[in-house]
Length: 358
Image 1 (cartoon, helix red, strand yellow):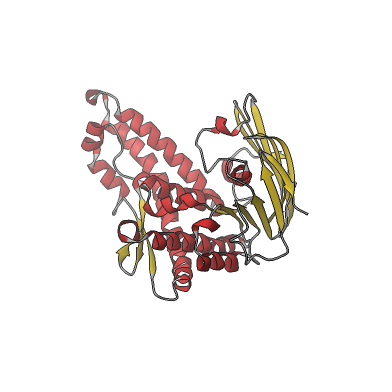
Image 2: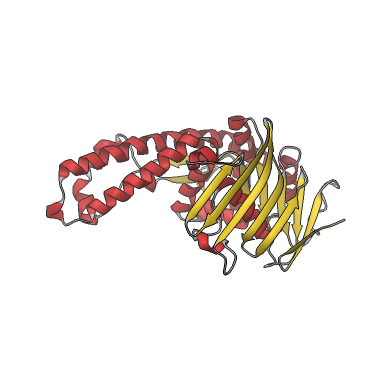
């Protein structure tokens, strides 16, 4: 899978921009706050119809504009696929092959990607919401049915929580039981998909981590399912507690992940170097996992991560990704990229202007 072209209209600081990419490695070179990361964000948005940096869509639309567009041409084994996402104050429209997709699940997966950025350390040491979002985003790319179940669960959860905010004497236990069944129906399917995904990710990541640490560390990724046995029974048992707290206290919206190396919880006791290595192991593992699931290697986005890694980890990242994935990288200097191949494209970025180097 390759991204051949990208066109931006009123995206962030870019009024109009059209780029053609190298099939292997593309480097965006420039100082901070010049617009490098915006390019990677645009590619991410094209793939997933949302930003990895903000939950506020209006931030993506250029100042004093009402609409923006990101378009691209993706080359896959089955041929070329034009993609386009339009975002306005009225909402978003996603198109594949120039046809509007009515459901997000039908669009996501047309362009698969993996992003590795300094904030990926939050996956290891951040809040549980970061890890749940990781599962949702990665699973959504390879299992369209998961997107449907996840969005349906969130709607049911929102409805149940709204009902729990009623005065206690106005809550009908029979109606609450109906809401429980809706939640359980979608929640069980979500948890099953998460369990299968993490088990597979664990297998891939364990091998990668052993290579990165020269067999000195064994990595284990544990899916911490908040529901212990039967979701419906546990939900029913918590009726009084949920009514008192005015919120749903159990379900996949409270799941988490745990990362263990040699029996030690990395988030609590691992060094920063170990946390970085675990994050790198997970991202490299995803490359082969997505290939196994879809038959296509994803594209790889590296946002200013080379300066965060020591020389050996840089080499590991380069050796694993090049030859498999088309890679897009931002950096402020080429000094630490001595091991890069000669056959690549370098784009100089300055004050929102991009020029391909000769």
